[in-house]
Amino acid sequence: MKTLILYMSTHGCTINVAHRIAVKLGGEVALVNLNEKPQVQLDDYDRVILGGSIHAGKIQKEIQTFCKKNLTKLASKELGLYICCMYKGVEAEAQLRNAFPEILHRHAKAEAIMGGAFYFEKMNFVERFLVKKMTGTTKTTVKIDQDAIRRFSDKMKKPLAAS
Ligand SMILES: Cc1cc2nc3c(=O)[nH]c(=O)nc-3n(C[C@H](O)[C@H](O)[C@H](O)COP(=O)(O)O)c2cc1C
Image (tube, rainbow, N blue to C red; front, side):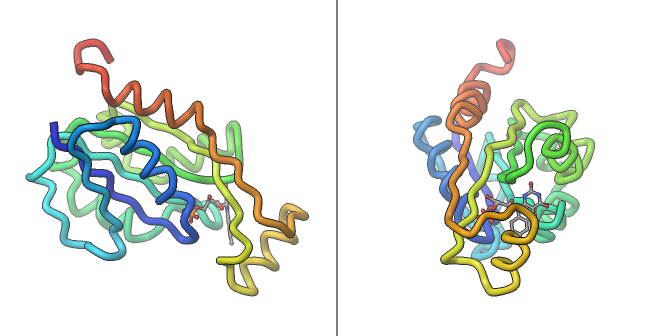
């Protein structure tokens, strides 16, 4: 089973989560940054995991475009969807729902909200200002949900009939 984890990350958290999923899945896993390789060949993979992060309520435009362009192919794979974000509960769930097309939600074997991180040293002035204003936080804060990563990876690994 060949797996592709395709991600977009603004400051590094979604990459970090992608690597953790890859370790948990084991086997043949390709990690691809959509930013660096927009022409990825989906035909080479049986299992595809898409990950992105939420900024101002939305996932990266590149992920949205990739999903739209490859809807039929993605819907034919063992599919996993995840987001990194700092909101929790219903707000986070709404962000996850809006991040991917409905057909992919219906088809996905596993979906997850993986928590997130504010990496202040990687933010520009405006981002720092916004995060401070919205959350009061002024320091790097990492709130990656390890349990969510484990549950998601376990679900992705299960044979289809058992999922
Ligand atoms: C400018 C800015 C805006 C953000 N907006 C949201 C948001 O609307 N909702 C949310 O849940 N998290 C928001 N976040 C938190 C990010 O989703 C979180 O930092 C995530 O881990 C980023 O992942 P990345 O490092 O892979 O880009 C925001 C972060 C920044 C810096």
